[in-house]
Length: 178
Length: 178
Image 1 (cartoon, helix red, strand yellow):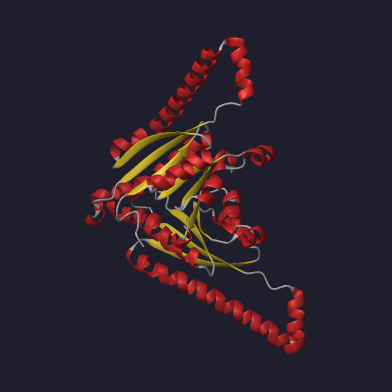
Image 2: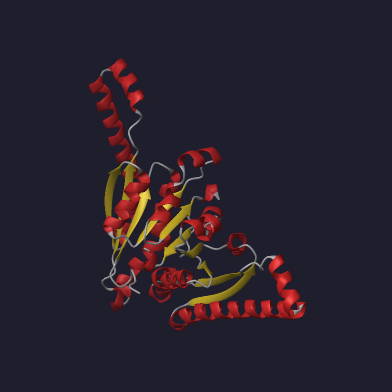
């Protein structure tokens, strides 16, 4: 069995605007990544062990066209598009800044390489596609505590991804949802 | 955040007769447990880090009564009950022996405490109950590659458990199913 110790490893953490995903990132850093990173200095066998942490954010799909049409009628097409793009850009910045703030304490002290990736479209498809394309060893995701109706409507991205991707998947729940 | 590094940790691995669950056990030992166990000698902060690996096997529920009734009619009640008990005992022995054989290389060289537990009844309920009762930090399970009809009929124990338990869950797929 080829192990992630024997050739370094690539861990993808799916993040979004939620507390749950930020908690999953922290949990992963504290309980999975740090441990292995220490090994780089401890034992010759592990001298090549590095962890590449890929923080993956998938931008929400654009709103339905009817809503855009109404907004365009009221405010003008260019304003609406620019406003939406600005909102989307700020959302990406905010999520990635939070994720970076969580990682910074670890990257300065441990042998971890952080990569940020932003996708767009259906979260399930983008995450599963990225995991496969990157050849990830592990996918880590937070678990939302949606109620029955929201879950029935939206489904669960983390569980759907867990079913689809080929690599091991860690689903992390926020303690407040436990 | 309390981490599993700071106070040792307890990892429950659900096993059954399948290759998938044995692969999940191997994967967990190679890629999650060994790494942390090394730390016991590397850094003072980790001197108290131990891993308790709980191997949990849930015996299949007894066959439906109509089948037992027919067998009892043909072979006598005592013979049938004794035969079923013997089969169940051997199944437990076989699964646990395989799991032990996988663990033995690691327990002799690393600071891992292995506990074996056997439950009986509905696998989902027993596994989720055990994880909660034991205060596990992580649940690791293999993922079966059931076809559509079997999956629709049986559901997926690993994904159902992932939804129910409070701790992080790792779902490991066998490469042959990937």
